[in-house]
Amino acid sequence: MQIELSKWTLEVETVSKESHRQMFDYSKADVEGIKSELQTVDWQKLFCDTDAEQNWLAFKEIIEYLQMKCIPVKGRLNKRRKPIWMTNKALKAVRHRRSG
Image (tube, rainbow, N blue to C red; front, side, top):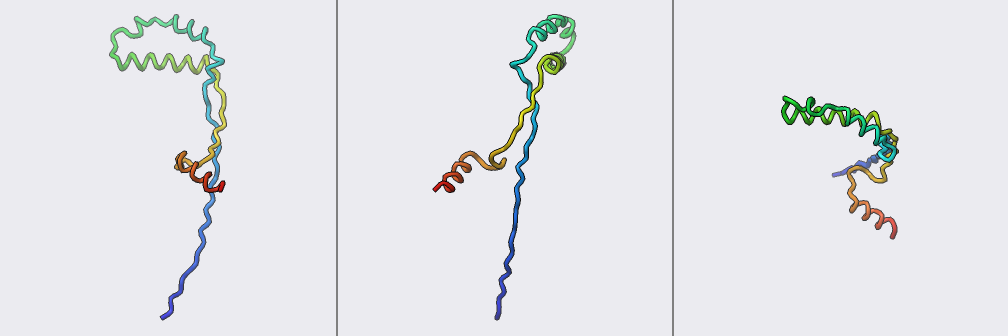
């Protein structure tokens, strides 16, 4: 009886993905512009005869509009140092294993 063992190789390559994420730069926000725009809104009329859900959606829409109008956006390069699935504890263990 002859048993032949097969040998195979698996090569896996991971790609580090850089993502450009847009964030609001609140330190450069036009706070006075936001305040003046909010003062021009007729809140009594806006919230009259509507339920809480509709009120919230209307308020949220105004805030999001002002956010886009008065707060500049900055790009942020997000480069991962570890795979998404790896926990900080596992990363620490790998570094410890490699160091000594």
